[in-house]
Length: 96
Image (tube, rainbow, N blue to C red; front, side):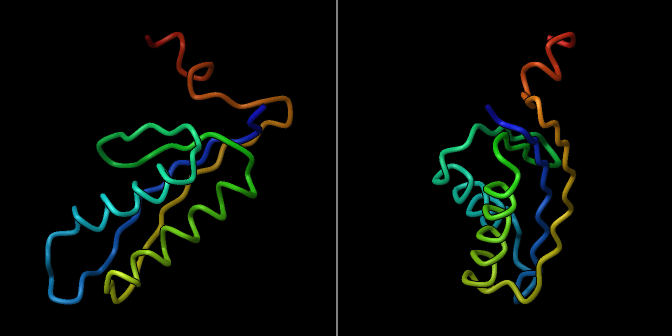
């Protein structure tokens, strides 16, 4: 069972001031390829899993940004950790 939820907003600085959306799409692709449950929201993406694995995915996202040419990257991260289990569905079920 997953023990953490991690939300990330990734803000790459593009080399020539280009639109960041293709970079954000590439960051979400890193999450998708990792195979963890995730939900994209307008301002951040939330992943569900084991905390060390989720933090590793964030590192890969940042690496991907620099591979694409970003000159710097800001990653705003929120972590919810619960040793007995963490679930996006459980945490938000009363709102659905």
